[in-house]
Image (cartoon, rainbow, N blue to C red; front, side, top):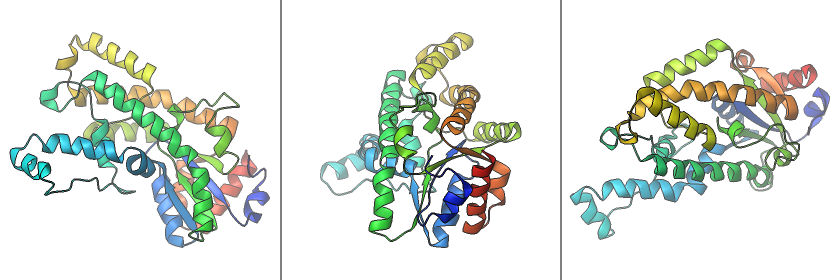
Length: 286
């Protein structure tokens, strides 16, 4: 690892950390807190995915919908209006909307084949966005003058890497430049996440083999054809399965490539100094 001991981390004039784990456990809160402190650059992988790599796909998706409305179609065809995504660190809805949900088109679903295609685009974008952290650590310091760097990873990081492969093309690169830190939740945290997701289901990234198996299992269990699938019901059904699939992969990344802190410890962080103390503790406890 880039820092072998707590003292290595504390003595480093330029600290670099990548937080990973379940969505909703505080990665973005901590990134915002450190950014507001003034010395940390906040690099959001989801933002990079949705702007640099998938921005055109997202905007084209908006345009397809707008072209179905005669009034907007006329304005678009005459270049009288401009449609673009307003994706931010805190609002990733445009990216989620593009990923979509498979199932009945009358309920907002898209064909499963199209859903798979969009998932593949997201996977490639996430891998590229993770590798881009290296150039952004240099930009953060060389252009903007930030001494420290925080990478706010996507919740699906564990699905685009192989934690057991010591030559994994993503992990083997980024660990040369930053400390990988898992925010580990409890079973209660997982259940709370499931409950929140059930109230407001949103599109997710799934590894392709897992997604195809889940889709087939759902259609068999519910005895429905692809075009009759309720999109929200499918992603609710699949979310708990996906979460159970991800948890051991998060643990494996931390075990083989980084360190772990608890969600409760992260929640207690209120300053950049608190964060540094916690990182030092995680390295000591490893």
